[in-house]
Image: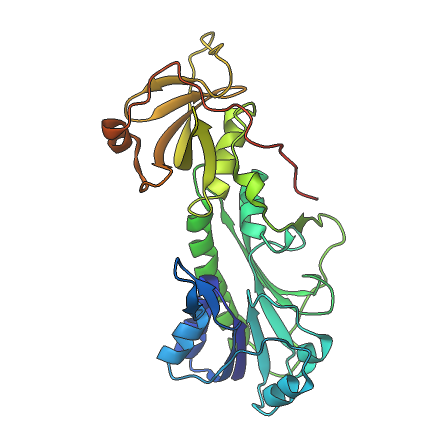
Length: 323
């Protein structure tokens, strides 16, 4: 098929590569304009643009999709389908109908659960045991279109957002190839999303990555997993800010539950064990402000942390996601 591809971040790159490997003709690649990045704030091309240029594909980077000449330019490419993967801009309705097969989207959740901007982090924060990818026919509503194909995967107890991101990205790439391989004549066969089970994956706020040790250990662990590797969950120990990258829950012996205030360091060694509102969390990988990410063992060699010290118990108010 002749495919017009729209995507911007790393998540979209495997799908672009998979479509090329499957023999589809990429008539064009639509991605967001270069953005300032890094300490020098020099312009940086998106991961999708970098991949497209490396493959010799034509790249379009309109600053706005409201300009009618943009739609004309895309129609002139004569795509049979528009494949959208985390493009980052809302497509005006005419864009959804510029190709015979319309526009289809790779969405990183099992719709209708977690419609919206941050499905990966929201699934982890909510303690979901599974998530997946839905290939969806796009329509005017936010992630409301009928599902063409979906597949689920399990979320491991200590799986972080970066690991889940990579698994879902690879799954989406495989599913989009399967969908296009089965295409005969438009439209794609699709099933309307159920009206029950709808919830919205609101955009992540930095304040949500601040640890509240008054929560139970399972909730604190979900916060650490949901924001790793970036922006990373943060906590403050006697005025020093730390990013927490990996942790696991500590099994307490029956009848031996700690009585320390939330945030208290209970033990140090292979990990830094911290009291939560209920239970204990062992932090195994962390990063001191201005330093590099390292194991707890490495950090403790150069920065002593002692039992009895206490992280700030409340870093920020916890506001639950809209469901």
